[in-house]
Length: 257
Image (cartoon, rainbow, N blue to C red; front, top):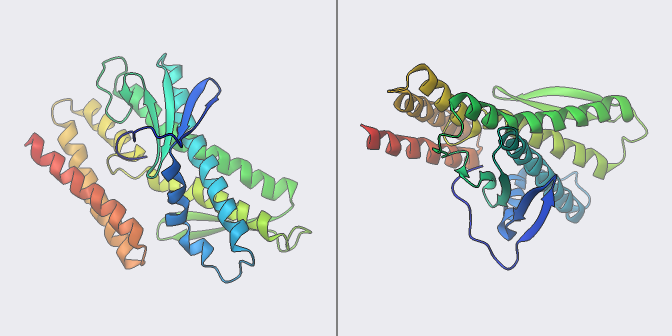
């Protein structure tokens, strides 16, 4: 999701998925621990160990599916790709460089927008599959809630025979949270998130000379607004996360002025 590819370690997990090489850095599993503190701190959870395993598994699958969307879009345009999962999320990387910084000329802004959007779309498709499972396989309900303007889909199995299965409910809850909330958040026009990449390429299509600077100004404003939103809602990781990205966009803007 952010920054550059980490160096390989002897403890990396490596495998192929649909012919796409995947490398999992051992520090990747810090991410669910950082982002899942609220879930693990829930007093209604009877087995924290099981909750932790579910949290790591769902984060792993969710981020892998997201990056797989980017990688498959790469391949659609004839570019080889590989996936790296690490402590800040994931990267879909072409042999010509990360899609976040590709300047090879092999693909234009319109294609970059498709590649950028393919990751969130894959994650939202996985969320749709979970919704179908809740509604039609388990016979439950989906409740809509909001964290500010961001949607949250909450599975409700209380009126079904599965209502007492804590692990199942937790798996569905985490899965919907990861694949709805985080993918919508990832579409915010803040660089280098997918939404920031989409905004940057759209601005460059509209104004090839000044589009980059325009997108950086949008990134600064949106990042600062989301950082303030996180502070107001005591989501301090969100505050730090978007604050750093807003500042990074500000620094980059100064370079182009």
